[in-house]
Length: 415
Ligand SMILES: [Zn+2]
Image (tube, rainbow, N blue to C red; front, side, top):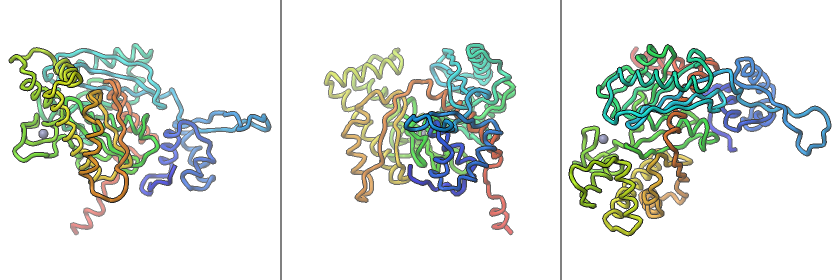
């Protein structure tokens, strides 16, 4: 693994994240990989073991000659601490309970009315899911060290306020505090795309990468970005709204109320809007978005030129978006995620070729692209990773409150 620029992350955190990323690793290799002295690694891993974050495991020596003591490796301590991840979406709500090592203890799902819900109905659903998933996992809710909550929309993770979400019938709700009060557990909140990015960072392809992007295509279009091993949210926690970057002046109407957003050309509802016209569907059309898209996909595969052109056009907008992401951030990897990635027209060879033509010509290969067609459970896992992130930050002694805000610099500038 190449050395990474990690100057601003405490060494103890780097060691914990390194062990987490590799699964199981001897101290001597940690020292080698992070280019620090074995003595520092020994001191800091003792503290991590003391804090209950890591543990030692015996591993057979290489070569298996059986001489001397077995080798000792470090790994994240499973069990002991549990967190719940909760994902609100427009069709169903899902929950998982995982331990510190990311092992899933239990999961649960409740169906819901697809219309935007009241705050009370949302809190009720959260409570029902917590009871169910804890019963399923054989633990009590008070054994949960924290809860991560994910919803689509504009979410301020620092304040816990949902500015707007398609699953809620009101704007500007302090949903994290309300849910924490209802559940009696600390709650962290974030949007879908950040959650799936956290899931990749903690449990997936991003474990060993310092800088990568995740672009999600579902009912909306989202993006999460990991910069220097950490989720980047912007100064006020509202950045990375790739779906609402404008790709057309005075263009198609978006769910956010503005025109010309990427999402209005690429998300579920954009494809369905075009499908209605192209496939001459009856109005009102009563089939669900999922069923309609499946039918559109079938027709494209059977050679219906109108259906095919809808996916191709969406694929071109995706290429444009990916090229913009690459030109802005230069990530090592872009992961395309979400249920819609089953529709391979979106990321066919033409899309990747178009992306390349829209990137600056630097003589280097474009960032690697990976497609991850996760089910809905990945979002709940990401929500759980959000709670894990907060829990481990507290255990490492640098909770979110301690995040650098540089008050000194600001005061200095004013004086
Ligand atoms: Zn928009």
